[in-house]
Length: 117
Image (cartoon, rainbow, N blue to C red; front, side):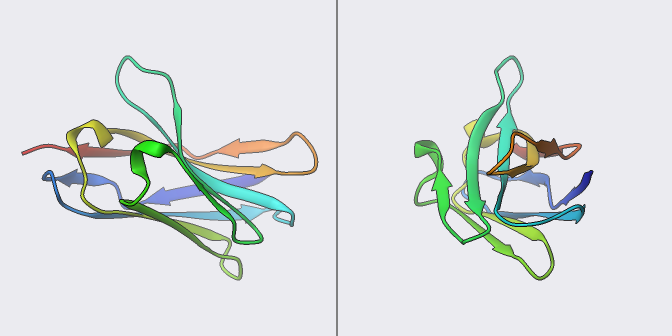
């Protein structure tokens, strides 16, 4: 089992910044990937960004150039730096951990991000 604890959501004005963190514990071992997905009201959950244990990132086109994902393997923690936030970035952001060799993944409880003036 893997447990994921997210933090860092909140309310921010358009153009502002937020940093999300997600700490993983339990049966963590490479190779794996950690990342963030989001779900806006009335919409399906969508990929935001992921990063492998080897440090390879992947971004949704809608956040490229504005968001940066990083991870600290020693702390089993993934971060999402979100800059130039837009109202359409509003949603519940979920941390995800998955193994890349076997089909096994886990989700955090979600943290709300609201971009509004």
